[in-house]
Image 1 (tube, rainbow, N blue to C red):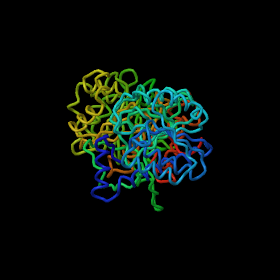
Image 2: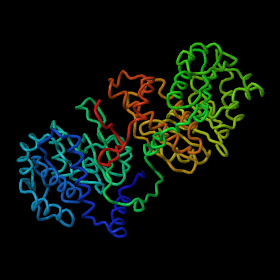
Image 3: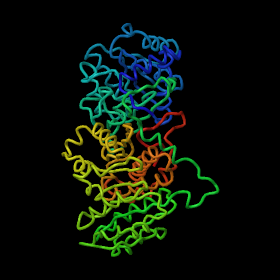
Length: 539
């Protein structure tokens, strides 16, 4: 699923009409109907609906939604900012059909502040508001009556469903918030997500405990060939189909890879233990934890299925360089499919040099995280994924150390930095944070939209490392999608954990508990819309 700019979305609509013969009126009909279907399914108890419409095509989508909702018995009012006689093109046609087919819908024309004040009672009585004021072509800020209406809606208890985008949000924005935009409990967009849909925090409603509402993408008739984008950005959740394939009935553990988790030190036994547990839960056939011998007993308690490889220790309980002696290293990586190095490794003694040499001397796919990443700070020339699979999973602080810049500089251009680093070093970079980026050696980037603040706990990165390694072990010939799937599953498991627990109380290991929910979850709903944010179903 490609992520488009506003200009690219406009081009898709024009190409759909001009080359593929699907009229703009048909696209509007499909879009408005998709909004209505979503509202009927997700908010079936909301019988009184007010549709807020502008004079453009976003308003036209709203007119269609109003007609469809009224035709199935909902009490619907339309508040139009402007005059019906001023409508043009497809929006005018949609209003004409609304008035022709449904006499019960009252259309209120608002042309000044007095008219807006007269709508107060109608707005207050509504259980559901549909925001169809301005769409992807809009550039902030909101002005005039639209800005005043935003203030009125802000204080209402009604659920708000935005058509395409919450009014006032720039479709091309990569910012997390948009000051002055309408609030939204859900967003229904069309054909493909735009930049704001994946980078913006469109639907968090503090009135409902800070939960994340749905952002869904509905197909409206544009063929895939018409969806063209130059930014090489896609949605990571589309890759999850990889993990939904049923396993061959004639399976055995050898078919799903053997992962070696290398890490741990005195006082940091939990990190390799959690990474190993996540690796097991995410489907790897075999998992061995290679940790300093003093913490072997602690790590092995995480799961009886976990195998152990004790490592010689050096300073402060960290791994010793002696473990890399030819015969010892060969024995350690024999029959290993993927190596995950770094969780809890420490930066004391031999540990940094051990990490660098471990990566250099092995040729199997490698996932580098935590202290192993720090070992390459100032020595990134040693990171070369040419001819092998190499995946790095830094948080912004680790990325700053790798790139020799500040965290602020990393956050200022996450997309550009991730793309440059991945292509230069010919590796896959998982840059964690709000909307984790998965940058590939070819310059393409997938954006992850799962996950929530409950995952801001120690151990979350270790869990992700284990899942990434497990996916690589199972799908060695589909590296890009394997990593994207891992990142999406990790966040999705966190979403399930937060849905049944308070977000303050979720632990990293709780996400492992909910991995089964994540694997079973399907992003496409009964009407064919794809949920790129939020969870279908009830807690």
